Length: 395
Image 1 (tube, rainbow, N blue to C red):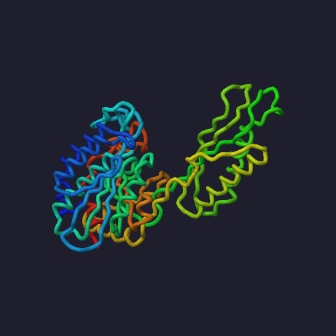
Image 2: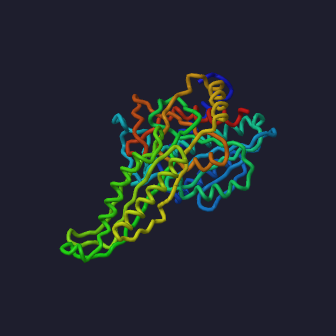
Image 3: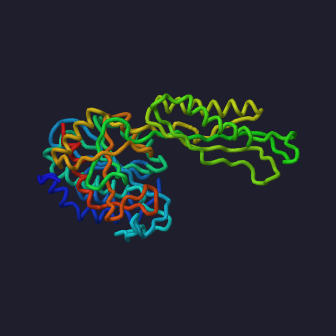
């Protein structure tokens, strides 16, 4: 990175951030259970002398009040871990610098880094408070992985006037030392499908005396594949993956119910809504044609919005990062088919989601997210701080 006041201060935080990241990493907590994590965050926020608000559950909003009037900006970090058993070695077989001490749980998505970089950014902004305009709302979101905390956060944010927002996600396919900030779609929205076909139970030897719900479920599944080709606008992308099909437990007993569940990913809201509607109609019409009933589960819904970066904010922040850190810190990553609750923030406030690269072949970081071998290159954290600070300090 360039040598200036901002980058030097960010790099001076490296030892602090390594300590914090490893503390979070060794003791991950699952969605909605981040009680000890919140205690650590509160302790650090109080050390900075900042005011904060505790949300129902485990979320937090901390406030940095700038020395000058200006736009009010939001920074967001997620705080939960995953129900994944961490492996002691990474993608290249190297031993990791630290691993989770909680069996069956780990930060295999990088939220430990997200929290740490946000704390580092808050320290930097507090140090350079005379340059901060407006109020900075620092959000620590509960339960991003299961989406259990986003509604609470959105409700709380209604109490504040926010002009722009910024989020960051570490990304295993982007080279360490690079940050990607692009306009347009960056992460996919998610469709959830959950359908129960209701028939009549019976013996396998007399299907005529029963009404087998497995048959319409199977037909509906095949019809969805055909409809995808003909219904989605050419040039747009909606992926569809049905991964749960439950019907019966014995080879010779026709069940009363069969359940089909899956998900879809989309970047264009109109195409996502279209896909959801035609899948729903296929399920209803197919069940009806076989004389079966159909019941949609609570999970059957448009679950998450895509993350679409605002063009004007993206351009400004990209220029600010280049000016602060250097052009060579800017990288390029393709849009990511994973989904994020951050789409709810960016729907309401123009902003960006930045990708912070963590791929380092020499170190062995670069395994897929939600994977036991997932690892990060800790040296990228000062760049993450500088990118977030560039968003806040740029006009």
